[in-house]
Length: 631
Image 1 (cartoon, one colour):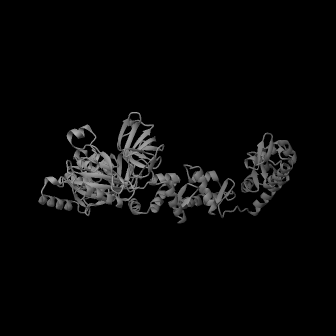
Image 2 (cartoon, rainbow, N blue to C red):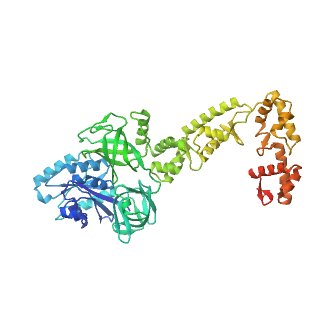
Image 3 (cartoon, helix red, strand yellow):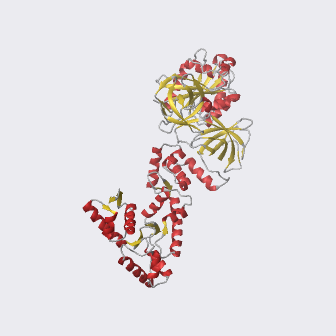
């Protein structure tokens, strides 16, 4: 079922609370001071059933200018707004400011309610209606229905309810599959239950026993009980007013303005990139470094405005900005927020979030401005691609990208597959993603490093893999870096020879003289299969210069010659012969001991131990007590 939140807006003493009492039969003023003074100070909440059967939540906001912060804490969760104007006073300053605010927040459905009609005559009422129509021009209420109401006598209430019911049918449903997000607007305790928080669930769904977190402190809480419209439920859905009994946290540790969210679904930030639109009616221009108040959800945060593409933003204009916040908060791309001047507290305009966790920008940077333009109007696929390009050096995984874009992993997964198909990004493994541009940069850097290495070391098979990894990525990223090397090898760009890496087309080429040295070395190692000399002894055994022998050995090690341990080098043919004899023996006997293996090769214990440990390390054999069996 679709869940709807209806809210009021309008000047103080224009009958908002009385109107709600006429609709629902309940009073939303709950504070002693509110009842004593006869005005709404804080948000009020109730509900009622529409003729279609839908149960709608209602938020009553205070109309006094001193309580505009409280008004802003409630208005963000509204689907339908009742702009309330008293017939005896007409449009007043707070009517206008409230209208500006709800228009800036992109609330799309609303109705104009003219109250106290019994206090005026028909001529006056006609003038008031004309004035209201003039004032709502170029707002979302321009074409909306205007209903005349006398809340005390019930006149117009039925028509209003039916109009709201019709608007509710036209209202878009909240996304109940997105990560949970609920701005907290009340915190209190109930004896026997503990801490209770309330708010409008903006998106997602919450179940009893869910573990969520409160941002920006990342406090983990468990949902003990849920209530929607004063009834206990197992699940609450986006678009509902929710009261949540939470465990693992005290009332003193939570405050209005914090956000209840799915764990790891949102980043906390001290900067926000967005577009500010300044109201036509704002009396001043917005200048760089102006101090402002950002109203997001139920919170107020102080910030400085850095204008990115303009020297100033005039009334009626808009521009790209970066907000430098004075305390952390969490927002999501596309969020609509209200901006007010620090002092005097006047509404400047609205901010649409483009990047919820940006890097610090310089002003008038064409690249930054271009990227913001793309992020602002781009498809989810294009925006994700930009995020991957931005974070590739950190080897982001799917979970990180879901958090960076405030989306569910399953949705990001679909976008990633589409980007992979378009060859714009590369999946290094099941979850790690990099942009193709970053991959091409890695390949270019690897090409430069390996070319230089091959020039300086023509007889070596290649650079040690660990050296190449540390040169390419000074801050080694572990398995992700290994995946990059594997991907380059799979793409036929490099080749990996045991622990060495070389460019794909690189070959060790020996001169005729070096070939003679190689033949002499091979002859020694093949004649002494399992009792080979130490490397140092070769320099005495062979009639060549030490430097010439060293160069040829470099070309042979890892190919014809294998270092089975730091002291012993064997020819590959000898190792293969040892493996063949080992297999035959174990297949006949089931296992082999060190002594049997030594006798099998007619060698010393030293060489038998070295070879068995080499086979163990290469998963040919494995040790079982004093015996070896095949791996």
